[in-house]
Image (cartoon, rainbow, N blue to C red; front, side, top):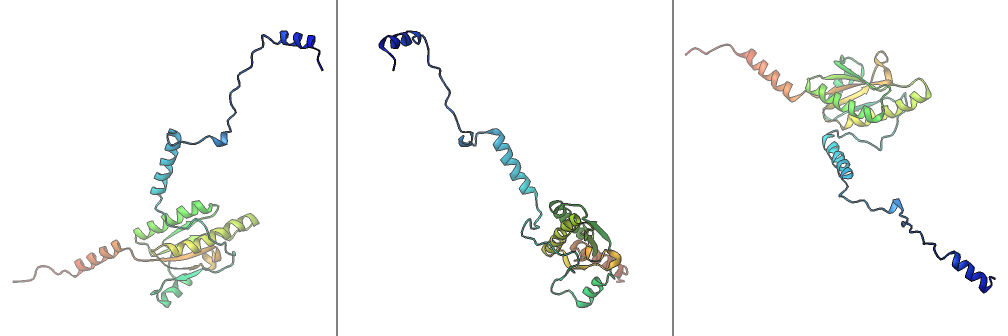
Length: 205
């Protein structure tokens, strides 16, 4: 314990010391985010615009992968058995094809939506979608995911009447034949052509 004389010496030595002012510590995680932040508002607006532009209805999640050798088959009510049998046998020539090899599920989701929409608008009736079977383990994992996605997504697309895994010459269980509805615009054009073909000229008075 210091003596009174020691206390006096210590007090004299510390008489000109000024206490430092220290800024209060702020936990960055507790800083409130306000709507007045222009960068935050910009990001929010961009996200809303991107969502509005995405007219793609295909599912993002909840899709189970499928084995490489699993046979895909689907037909909507009203599709004749004979038509479906011809599709299954590969007797409808593919008018266009989409290869999903090495695509991520998100990229494939965009590609298959646009491919089916464009094929339908151009009046195509039979197309081929290649999702792959995979040769290496890594490729098999991706292909099984894409295969499950294709099976799920094609059912969600209104222009699709039916689909079935392809014959070996067209990719086997690594691809699918897809039958599309006839586009209403193409139906109208065909009716007009048929009607004009029936015209025989002006009837005599």
